[in-house]
Image (cartoon, rainbow, N blue to C red; front, side, top):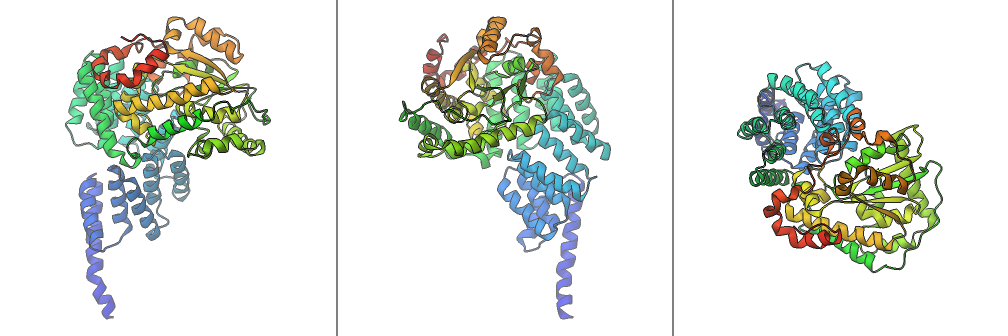
Length: 547
């Protein structure tokens, strides 16, 4: 009896705290809810809601590993709570692990099919994966469950803006803003529509007001990036550069979990380049068994982020015999095995054909899982990191054809700096101009060595030459990969408009051949000056004018 009496005050205290946290969350005041919850946790109190709020705050502030620990602790106390699974999934998504997040959300969906938050998070994950069609479906499902779900409306606006459907972006953004005039995702989507519609000054004013309000660092990073676009559209290069720089700084602050040790990624690529150089003359074309599910013609389109290869991809996709998958990293695990570490290249060279056959089988199974029953005549594998995987590609797929994309290094590096890619250790380097330039240099060292030393069929494709002579350059590409020219390839913008393109270039693709980006670096020559010593050898190598 004494034990019951002694625990009652603690129970009453916990009940009161849970009630306070619940009120703060209903008022959408996460900071207050976290302050109360954290104080209770520090005093030794334990409750699933307190841990969920702790996890949400940590997630929002980029402390992803701590957030996962909080959510998993909460799950031990309430294993049947689908909202805890939603918290885990949201944190995984924030780290770029969207496939893993979707699996968690499937479990939450089985527990409780009609929770709007679960559907919303599925939309978020599909959007991050570039699957606009399923993202839309998930957001629309969210709104069927909760018609006033402002974030789902904003999500629909963001998806539309990313694929270049600015009419839909404007309509959904304005709808969301009627419920919450300061909703950041909707505000940014509307600003993107205004820039596309020729009203960058209006977008600038709108984003300026948003940036003066209390928003998360992630929202601030995106708003600053689009503000940079608004200023760029007004030819205010100096102001635009500062906006891009500030936005990247915000993103760096919130993505510290991804931050590799200083220079680690670049150094790992330089080490790989040095290891490859030591094997010059040891590479010969193997005779590989073609798996039954393999494509008749296998093409790798390799580039560096910012090379504007989405246009070429869509030109090829206009041919009904060609299948592309956007930017699926199908060789990620194999690269970890055969390209990372001092002895990796030796292991790749000595690997038996039966060992490599198993890797090939996994690759083609992954392709088949994504395309379903479609026949694989010509398959184009496009992913920026494939430039660094050319040695692996040479061993696994000796019959593959490689389209080696080239663009003025200054345009490439500046474009990769101003655009936000899904954050990984590799792309984290793109958040500074110096990091982007050094990463470009290290990547190109591997690419150039591979072109000169590996038994691969390679064809150089220049973005600028395609803009100047579309028919001639595309005809050369078609002949190289063994497909015929088709008139509808010229109208690739229509293909882009009819499909959801998982590319940061999607809005430009809907406009057709994008010539405005050629030589855009000249507007930012002063800002690029510090990295010119890094880029100068490549400018010369690829025969671009020095000024």
